[in-house]
Image (cartoon, rainbow, N blue to C red; front, side, top):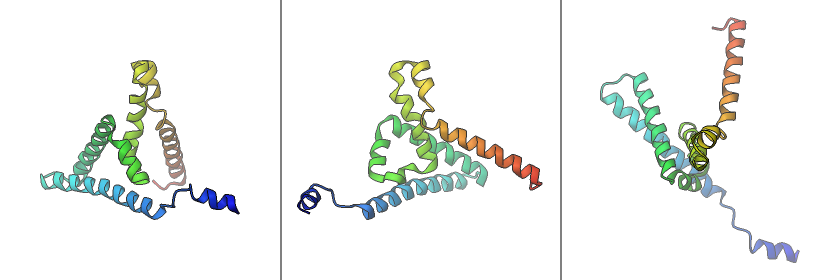
Length: 142
């Protein structure tokens, strides 16, 4: 009983609500940035498909740049899961190992480790997509 009271004095207060709010705001800000980019490209005369492509490219390049500058880690610490918005989080997961292992050389460092975080995600994604495509074709859904 006394130990639990003693240990509780050193335990940080739960911050679940704060973490959820920060994740929501961070993810929302990233998504709103993408929406603003898409709206700007469409107002310049591009169709929806082209605007979506340029939005994707802009978000990926921005995430790679801020990862290279070391700012994405700070964003991840503050925004938690909100910083893992699929497109920017994936770009970060590709660039981070490349930067971490660049000291080992371009082939054995960057080249070998660039997909260490995102490689399993790609492998599962490709496999599930191929299986779903085959299943749809066999069932005559296409």
